[in-house]
Length: 419
Image 1 (tube, helix red, strand yellow):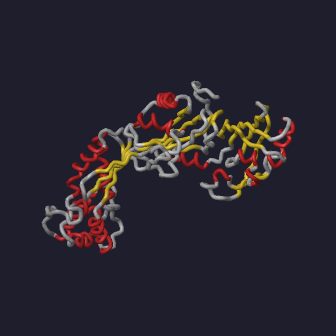
Image 2 (cartoon, rainbow, N blue to C red):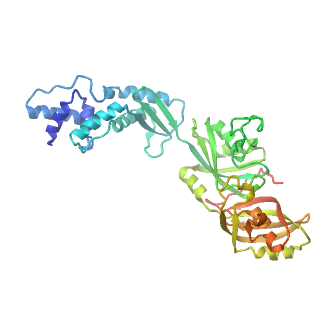
Image 3 (cartoon, one colour):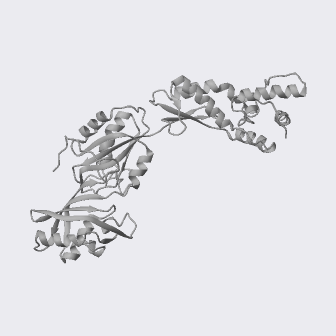
């Protein structure tokens, strides 16, 4: 169908504004706005038919006059964003089904190949106006805030993008889980078993880090993403564990990281310490979660019977470099699938004796169960130190002293102490 014939057919549907008319050909002649394009098509059609030009004065049957309210919508969005600190924004909208069905009916009936949806024009035009009002730029990829206009109800919903901070943490107190554990009985609702806290443990590394950050950013929550995790009874020492903390819905975004670090370390009271390195993003979260980092442990091992350091060292060396077959440990079998994992011990040696217990350092492949490497877990891990010695061995204390760096290694905050 020729262009002017197509325009004439569109006008037969009913009164249509310049925006909606121009949008039917929105992906042609990119130097024009849709309203300019629509007016030009209307004028050209009048000239071609040799009839007087008459601007459309009736309410548009597609948008019902929506594009006359762009400034009003921009004001509503700007008002909804007041009190929120942000640098970049994006506008979205929820379009009533009737509008979508109406414009798509025209596209289909006339086989239009270059239309632009109303949603796209509305978002662009309101975005330009809000950007001018607030002084902040539109970002289509990673905006700090997204304002969604509900065209049917007249309201604006604001979605605040999370803020990510990369760092490392050190855990100096045993008995603290890495993340919040909901009570197994009430699933977080609160009951007698958990003292109506909804939690299995009063604190976690996640909460000790999160509380000052939630307060500083006036956020809804903060979620810890760690590069692996240590057992609840293990300390995290040495170079610390890499993590990214996700600050959920922060109403402020600009804070000095050194001041935040000091606030977290002061609040944690020596139980946990952090080094906050840089502002991160979701891609780094994915990197941390997928990184298969080697870990180094310092453990104290109790062995039944009389063994010398040299005998223990000889037994340990038989574990080095061989394939360790580990069935899911009995202690975690209630929450993890029962399967056999193959892992390797990179390095292992006995470095001393303390109070009759052997001090052993282990560098293990990611996913290696250290306690079971020593005890054998009733035959679920093989080979093991228990199997090689022919005597029961068990870990009495465990500290993580190194997690392979995802970014360059850092030193722990100087104010921290160890046991």
